Amino acid sequence: MTHELEQLQQQIRACQRCLLAGYPVQGPPIFSGAAHARLMVIGQAPGKVEAGRTLKPFSGSAGKRLFRWFGQVGWEEDDFRARFYMSSVTKCFPGPNKSGRGDRAPSRKEQQLCAPWLEAELMLVDPEVVVPVGKMAIERFFGRNRKLVDIIGARFQIDGRIVVPLPHPSGASAWIQKPEHQTLIHRALGHLAVVKRELGL
Image 1 (cartoon, rainbow, N blue to C red):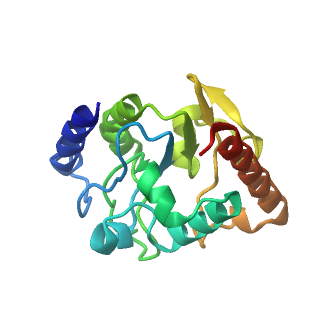
Image 2 (image 1 turned 30 degrees about the vertical axis):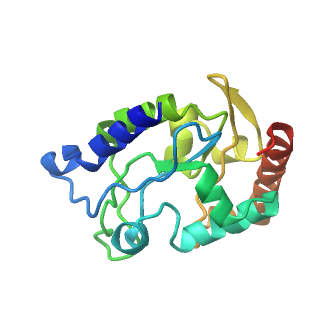
Image 3 (image 1 turned 45 degrees about the horizontal axis):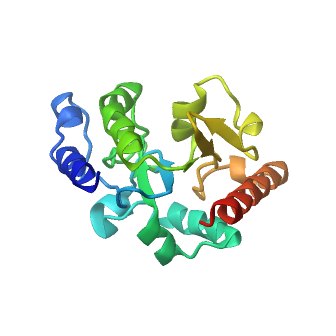
């Protein structure tokens, strides 16, 4: 399985689908982790820092907050990155927003073009636990019509896997600033702490 995942990763790195379709994606595809990782984090898309400097998922400002959350669960960043798989719905930095504020959100078409890669990663890594981070990743498991308040703070069983969603940890997110939503985030982290203990993660 390790060989198959390495082959898949090479194919992802060589992918030109979005560029050929006219989307201004930038930088290389960003993901990390090895076969047989027991937990997989799925984000939305790499940011400028990830694509332009670190080449590691969740290594910008939003990633710092995500790993503060994981620190509350009992996971240290270096150990987490070494043992678990991290990827995203779209693999390449979508480029800056035309307004000049923040990153451009990948279109539905871009998500569709990239979807086979994520599905292949899920199949080959076959994690016991999935943590979708942000609305775009959450929609992969719950569809477009569910509200975050109905999903964040709960633990689900989907396709034989434990799924514990988290909101996007961006500092620009108004959602995570509300006290009632912070309570839901705390509850989600509590579920992850139980999962960590149950499965020995």
